[in-house]
Image (cartoon, rainbow, N blue to C red):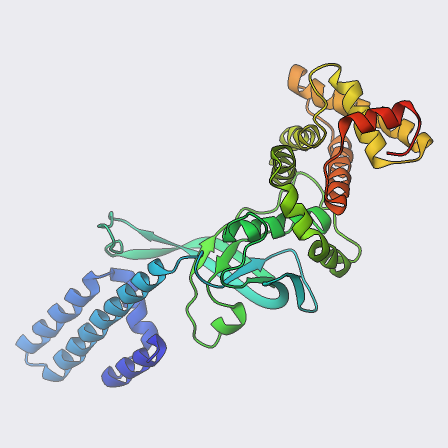
Length: 368
């Protein structure tokens, strides 16, 4: 029998509304049971046997409420994400059809408005037990709209990632290719389409922070085409993540999308580019500019212009680090675009840029 069915049975037995019992439990915590039974004894002493019976039944219902709640808590604690099918909520992304991203990993349409109101307790909790009452609600809270859901089948991993990081890597590629506003606020043990029918999900919070408001979001013209791009290239990208430089490049770029200042974003984007190209320790500005310009274009004239642009942007980065001059928004946006283009090419090719080959191609005015 499900928890909801049990609750319906309890409520019928005492003629009470489930929401009343739950509200009382939330208001007073476990003390609600004692309060109800004390009230029953008081009414019995006053000769109000019918009132006493109602309060005694309420006390029993509250006791069963807390027993069920404790049983559910222990059930949820026993659930391990490494051992079950996982469902990842996506905000900032909408898909109109189910797409197989990789074997055992799917991205599909769904909708859920998830609310997390603030509730206060005023006494410390004992180990493994809820905070004692009273509890009070407060204004505000967290709310997100979920428009897409990734499903990771039991036993499936992407590359060398564990299961939770398999979902992180999917989110990282989706942000890289489609929009840096995309987030995975939580991962669930239950499909969002099934929750409305009575299932009680377990959530693991992941990216509850809002998308950075420092930079305007880059948004793909055709998101579904880019979802298919992710499905074609996720395994290549996962294989590259075994390289320390590429892993640092991807993580730095992804962290820049969460940055709270233009300066932080600029440092992280250039950290990503440096980790990907590894220009060495001598004449870094010139060497890195040559490498990146050669990598991004085979056209010699375009390459020359890109070289000058990269030198200028790298100087902005240096001025910020060494002279505390904050970068302007346009410079950070242009740097973000360069980092994104370089990472996308390396993923598409399934290999890292080769520094010496890039330098030779530049010198010979040849394509890389």
